Amino acid sequence: MSEFTPDALLVGRRVRQLRKARGWTLQDLAARVERAPSALSMLENGRREPKLSLLHALADAFAVTVADLLGAGPLDRRAALEVELQRAQDTSAYRSLGLPQVRPGPRLPTPVLEALVGLHAELNRQATAHLATPEEARRANTELRALMRERDNYFGEVEAAAADVLRAAGHAGGPLTERDITAIAARLGYTLHREADLPHAARSVIDLRHRRIFLPHPRDGRGHGRRQVALQALGHIVLGHSEPDGYAGFLRQRVEVNYFAAAVLVPEVHAVRLLQAAKAERDIAVEDLRDAFAVSYETAAHRFTNLATRHLGIPVHFMRVHESGTIYKAYENDGVRFPTDVTGAIEGQPVCRHWTARAVFARPELHGAYQQYTDTSSGTYWCTALVEPAAQGDFSVSVGVPYAHVKWFRGKETRERDTSRCPEESCCRTPPAQLRRQWEGSVLASARAHTHLLAALPPGTFPGVDDTEVLRFLEARAREWDPAGEPTAAGG
View 1 (cartoon, rainbow, N blue to C red):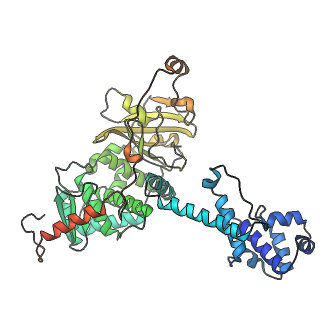
View 2 (cartoon, rainbow, N blue to C red):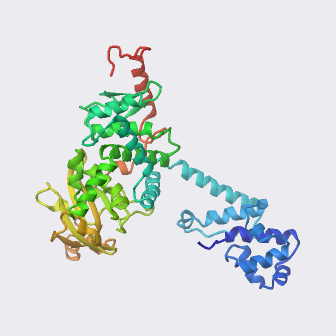
View 3 (tube, helix red, strand yellow):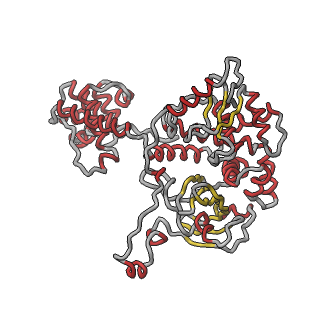
C-alpha cells in the first residue's frame, strides 16, 4: 500500500487559518507544539510537508482531529485565494515565462490578491479556449496513448462487442466480405449508402433519425479500405457513441471505432489461434495475419499490437512513418523510447535515421518485409517493416520487440544491424562537422511543411469536420426520400 502524502499547501493554509482564528502568534503555536517558529512558518507557507507526529501535535493544540487538518473542508476566502495564486504560479506554463513569483503572504492586500488570481484564471480560460488546434490534439493523444499502454493496447469491451456482432451475423471465419458488412448493418437496423458528394472532410456520416450510413463512393479515392470505413461507422452505433464532449472524447471514440473495425475484420478467436500456432513454431509474421484475413499490412500490424501482449506475452511497439521520416502513428509497451515534443506527443516527430522504420526506405527494392536489429539507449530491438503507398506518399509500417522476444519471429536470422544514439544530436540530426564547415553560410532551403500539423482544426461538434457541410448534406438527402423511406430520383 502506498503511503498517503498530505497536500502541504492546503494543510499549511488550514493551520494558519486555525491559528489566526484563535488569535495566536507563530511563537504561541510553537510553544504549544514544541517546534521552532521558523519550521511552522515553512509549514504554513506550504514549503514543508508535515510529518504525522506534527499533525497530531497540531490537532491537540487546536482541539481538532488530524482528519480536520487533512480534510477537504472549505478555507476562508483569503486562504483560498492564497492557495489559488500559489498553484497558478507553480504551473510549468507560468514558470516558463521566467517571471518572479508573488509571495501570497499576509502583507499582500486582498484586492491585489484577487486581481492576480483573476488574471491567472482568465489566462487559463483563454488558453483552454484556444485549444481547438493541433496543440490540444497532441496533448489528448499523449493521454490516450498512456491509457493504451496501461491496457497493453487491449480493449476487452470492444473485443466483446465485435465478437457479438460476428456471432449474430453467423460469421464462421475467413475474410469478411462487403456483403457480410451490409448484412451486419441490416441486423442493426441501418442501410449503407455510398455517395459521391459526401462532405469532403468526413469519412462517413450517420443519419440516426433515418438510420442511414453514408460512405464515400468507390470512385472517391479517400483512402481507407471500403470495408474498414463501413465498420468504423457501424462501430459508433454498436459502442453507443453520442456527440463527443470535446477533443479528447472525439479522439477516444475514433480509437474505439478503429479498434472495432479491426476486431471485426480480424476476429480475436481466429487471430489468436493463428498467432499461438505461429509462436509454437517460432515463426510469427505480420504478413500471415494480413493474408489470412485479407486486410492491409497496417491493419494486421495494429491487430498484432492488440493481441501480442495479452495472448502471447510479448511486449511490442508499432510505428507508421512517412518517407520524410515523420512519425504519423506510434504505440509502445516494450520500453522503446520514441522521440517526443515538450507535450510528450510523438506524432510529427522525426524518427532516427538508423531505426528500421526509416532504414527500410534506403533499400533499392521496397517490396517485401525488411528486418533489422537496432541497439538503442533503452536496449536492443528487432523490428520488421514494410512500405505501403498512400495518397500522401510512401509509409513504412513497422512492428518491433525487445531482443529477448525475437526468438518467436520469422526474420530473426537477419544480419542487418545498426546503432541509434538518439536523442543525442550527434546521432543523425546534425551533419558531419566537415560537411557542415564546407557548406556553412552557402545554403538556403525551404521546408515542405506538413500543414495538417500546423493548421487549426475546423471548429464544430466533430473536430475536423464542418458541421454546416454535414447538415446540408443530410438535409439534401432527406428531401430525396419519401416518407416510406424509399429513394426518389437520386437515392442510395
